Image (cartoon, rainbow, N blue to C red; front, side, top):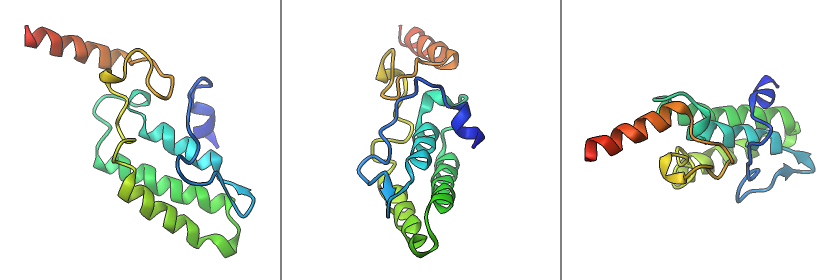
Length: 126
């Protein structure tokens, strides 16, 4: 998976959050790591964090789980997908903005575009 190789080594994720990292002894942690990366504001260019991006990230999670799960448990990926679609945006999606500080919960520093926008916002307020 090229996506896993593109994730910075110091990127911190919480696996599948409040769900198991494996199903029927088949690990799905890799799918959740990719999903966490897709949800991090600091890992993407400016302006890409939109509803379409979130939906694509959630669908990618469902597809990646398909790779790991045996045929008799494929239905569980749809349960995961529905739960993520319903609850994923409550606090996780696009939550690594400037207010997260120098390091967000994923251990990423603010990208250049975020710092520039932050300074512009401060200057506009003056």
